[in-house]
Image (cartoon, rainbow, N blue to C red; front, side, top):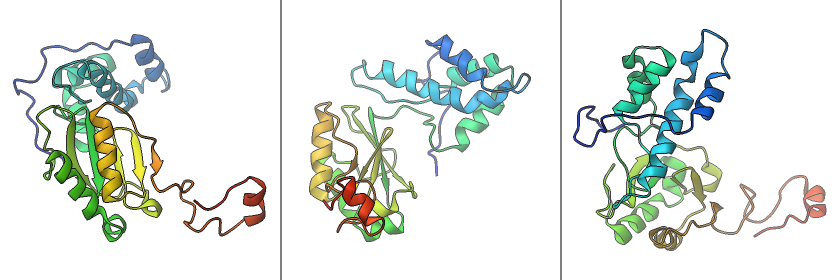
Length: 220
């Protein structure tokens, strides 16, 4: 469930304009004439990314989110009621409706991840940066914690999504290492963290073994 938000909060900017107008035009052009309102979702995503770029330069830093002024601007660009934009932005969990940390830690705790140790991942986050509640943000503005439902990487459980990247096959120790790297703005390699290739079985290929051998694919 998304956190309640305040469209009139003090942190809401007075105005917003897209920096990359060419990208805006390209997005709108993807849709048939008269159907430009279909561009609302990718434009909301573009807002969030542009805000993240500017937010990274602040002290403390701020991650990507969607201000009310930006939604109003999208409504103007797409010639649609602002309320329609608010409805879309508030419905989908991928849009942050208030400022978040530079690194948004989305921890999956659905059954497969829970069975494989997501409790350890949550504990690593709490022990390292003190976060334990949804939408809690560190004082330095670097991290916001969000417990989420299935992110579709069950074969690589437990996993965490950090901004756009998946970190899979995690352990307590590896999660601590990832956080400490991000504290120094060092981005760890994404994907499986135990050395295996994608979602391949831990003991190596179990099908198409001859083709895997020719391709040099082996167990971790």
